[in-house]
Length: 357
Image (tube, rainbow, N blue to C red):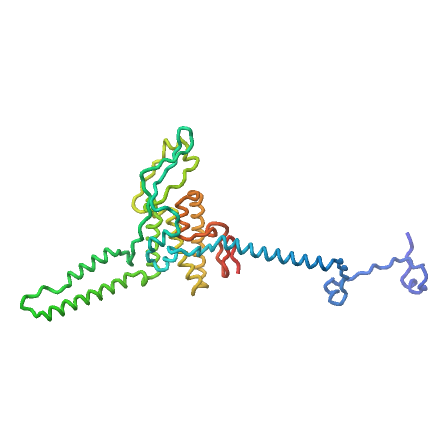
């Protein structure tokens, strides 16, 4: 083993002497690189590689053009999907604000169905292929919506009530010796009172002066009358048959369905229309004075996702049939209502993705 000399002896040796056999200590630094940089000890940066300035300008121009193109494509994609809450404004959709009926010409303008048609049902023949057999059922457009009044009254019932009250309150038949002037005044006063009562009842029963709850109830009745299958079966063809329904064995033994009793209130199109009316009310409140209402925003989100599930189900079942096109055309629904993810946040709405501030 090599003998080690004492440190005292090593200090007394000349600087050029090689007799100190103790190994030199390795330099050690306990300071972190951040602390060393703060004291002025910065590491040397690698020397940048030389590049042609002309090539640098071209690369920057290509990068800017790529970013601009991505922005344009993102905006076009969002515009194509549409608004997941509002959709496209249509006469029927805007009438939810007042619950007043839409003229037949305005409601049929968004549809491309012919005025009078004959329905045809596809049935499989002996060879297994589908054949279209026309039936004698004539498909025609519905008439204009009947006007609605508040408290679930109809204009016919109001007319009957006014005529009855006028007959009960009219002046009694006067004797021949009565003063004609007094009789004329009584009749004039009765006519004026009846006109005043009629105007008061018309204002009370008008949906324009009704509450939001009453308008929602009226819109529910309008959705049932417009999209219920008890009404749409008269002017819409049935959906195309699937491969399983074209099977001769399935046609030979059709399923016995329970006949509908009363109006159709449970089909997918009716439920979607009712949810659209409720979503419009909640969206108006959320975008107005109730911006910070968390419960309202949660209810709006729940209704949006419930409508999205029903739309996906109906799209899968109807396969783009006339019922689907009638629903989308009248309500102004866009692809954003059933495609992608819908999230309601404080800020701008983004279709087909999560909404961010």
